[in-house]
Image (cartoon, rainbow, N blue to C red; front, side, top):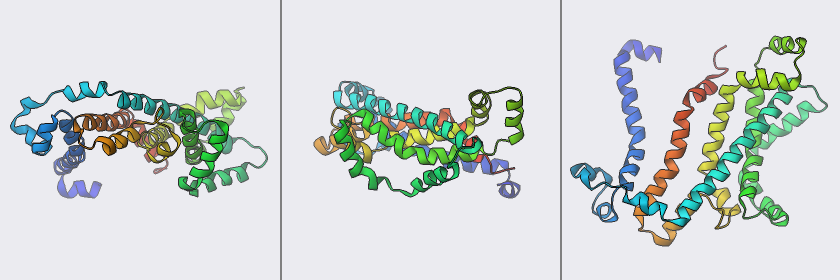
Length: 279
């Protein structure tokens, strides 16, 4: 990047990045404009034709969306699935990551290798066995069942990520805290968590986005009363096909939430991604 700046100058590089950003945001802008057009206008032409008569844009489609019980219920189901899953994965992975990095206990390395080995297990392999197990436990078709499945398959990567990050904390810092009388819990909450905030934020973003946008797991494990927004939108497309006045704002709502989460935590995300790249 520095070499490119020397040859082209900061202004040219910034202009290029602005163009890339605008291109990346074009689908989101197009979906937003489509969600504010009537079905008749959408049938006549693409969303870019709105600039010829922007006065025809309205929020009527969002009013119709709020009146659609299926989509509003699916939205809150998505929240009830994504938020607890993200919190559980982050909390359990942080505790396990600290234990694997700095606590000595029998079989620590073997257990960690087992966790790492679980990273190569495809989600599809566990769908039917877990579905049968959840059926016996009464969890099949429920929100807790979907949450547990996501937590189980999200933990291996989460533990691997946080363990490696926590292991980079200087050993002298932890030893000094122990010499000052700090308990392991106090060291974990007052020292390790603040230092590991970038990695934890990055993990939370990845986990939230993956669960929010998931359709495969929800399609199998959630019934009609607990299905998230992705499944509900797919169902309405299959049933009605042409109800773009409901589907477009629903799709924008499904897209804008993860985008907002990403931009809200982008500073921590960049720090987490860059952590360890420079000594």
